Figure 1 (cartoon, one colour):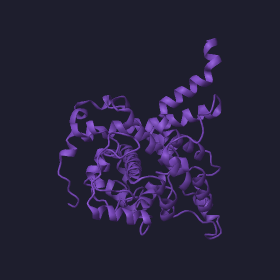
Figure 2 (cartoon, one colour):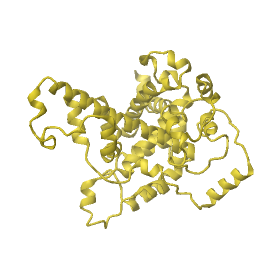
Figure 3 (tube, one colour):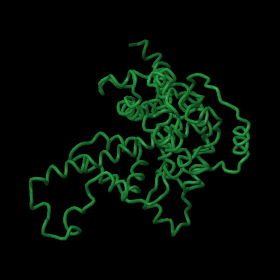
Figure 4 (tube, one colour):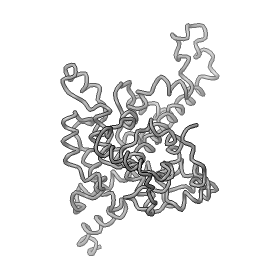
Length: 369
């Protein structure tokens, strides 16, 4: 015990470093910093200044050494527990989609322990950056309404892409796309869970259906039930909810029954604004020198070689999806149709060995259906 007390700073710092992974300590520290904004969702000038001060995000390295024992280390550990919660949930729900060896395992057997260090780090990195995005660009309706008719400038989708997404190579932006799809899918899933709970309560009570009243005056509207209706008419709610903090999202995803209904009501509003989905569909490098270099590389017919499962390089599935052609600018989601299906299995997270085992890379690439 005395030995631990004498070396507790070093021990705890080492534990935190090993658990998070040294390659993304910069992301973890930046996510911790952004979680401490006085109000989530910065004005454009504030976001630009903060991002300029955190350029180390782009290389994943820490801006400083892990702090010694104290609130910083413990806070870093706590935020990582939220990140790990979502990573675990992601693996449980997506790993089996690959097929191969993992498809023979029971759902309870699919967990982070099955992943390589590189696979875990890729997922952690995307979730940390997803948290940062939410802290930077969350839309606060009260602040917007009080901004004296637009005198306070909030970043729109192009600004979000240019300021934040452009910090990262295209394949790391695709990691964010995968997490964005995952979070929005989970929000819709929890809404449907509320629907089922509500339906089960009223199905045996004829009076509660208000059958003698105009449908639009009853307790529920015709499109209340159904995935397509919610997706079509409540996209803004869904995308707003996706920018909640990790701790808020964790509360929503963990809740059930009446508690789920309560936390959903507390954290869901109708907010029309540009969120991550819109930012991902921007092309901020259009007509830039980097874009021109990309076009020249395409014209030259050069092929990109897979260089192994290094977290600082694209994985083999990303290269395969681009036919081993260069892709060095931020690729928009709209202009990469094949990505929509591949994102559902998190293709940019997995190692070459796992991808070959699943036979994904043996499939013929179909760019347009």
